[in-house]
Image (cartoon, rainbow, N blue to C red; front, side, top):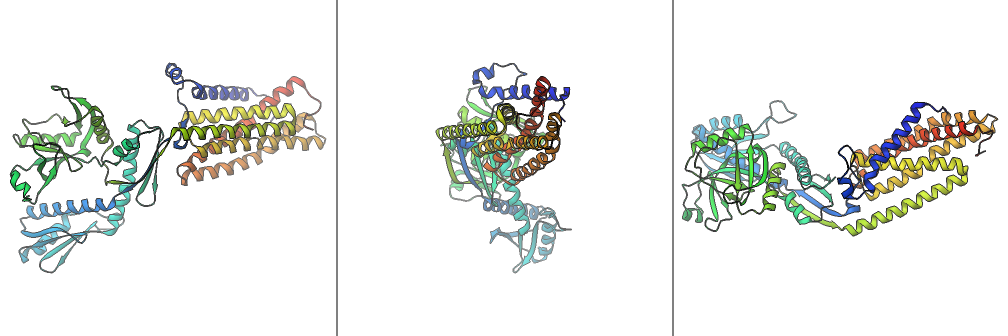
Length: 534
């Protein structure tokens, strides 16, 4: 194995050059990095929350509110289906976690039961012919409509998963690099945003449900009737930030929803220059919006965000282009935040902030300084041990390979944009400490072969070939443990596992291949009669 093959030399040189190239941006000022040519790498190490400071939020997904919303929508679906079939009913509403309705004509109870069973709900996963909604008869010509418990549990779990994805998109839009967003328990989400110094803005952007709907205004209800609470069953009273019209009565049924948006961005009104939010619908939304506006010219429609009317303009002509804008009392920042929320999508359920913490940059600087000191101490201890145990030549070659190992770790983490945390620094120190194990195994095997009477070249070759299986076994088990920690761990555990995994791969490369090439160069140049480590 101790041969100076061309491919080995090329591989070592290429690894060192690329490692230096990708690690270089970490020591360059930001202005110098920005002026680098386009083909040069510019990524630096991402520092975690504990190193550069930032915000920590513990959020709870309000699954109870999600269930209440589903029941409210179910009431409207029951109303619509019974009216379409011209079945008279009374006392429609939510009671005891289910929807109840009384059919006026006893002869229409069974037809109503069939209609609701055939039209409400969707097939339930994991069952044959089952649906997520049950419809049962009760006394006094009443029907009870309820969600299957398994369907509600599955929807709550999906809501948490969907919330995590939407939170991730919103935090990414803020420009925060490598946020940590993990699930905790059944309905909680932990958000760590390194570098985000304004937790209140982060909380506002993350916590806003951002459910956008376009609903027709119910002009049949006057202001006096609305103030007295006389609202038609299919309408609702929503607040508005307009002193001249603080409340607006709108139809409950949404004509278009924010899910049909494909683009939203902050802009300025073409006439008065005020900040607005420009939007564009997909094909389905554009078609539906065009139909509604063409059929309701002269009437008003409300743009509703989280059950609050942003504006209620009058439809002067059909809007068939699939695009428009939202105007209100926006500043450029609030308009930009609303556009961000609309691009990221609406949360399926409200988020409640259970815990909020801010980590200062000073604390992160102290952690970095402590990490530097501990790394320097660990590296110095390794240098002393290797030089005392194997001499200046062989110990120095191990130290040189160790330096290249550290260079490759930093380059790999910069390239992959992995986040370095304080536990990650611990993983880096552990990697440096364990990296020389391969050299120790190789050198000790060489000693044994020399004591057995073998020549220098044979002893050196046997040291690499016979120690290789032990090196691979030891590092493979460490790599498997690191992968398991990365798969099932969260936050700092993942940072530690990722650093350790990269370190294992680079350690095997540097401790074996680089050491082998350097020793082969030394042997060819000096042709020694004895080994310096005998």
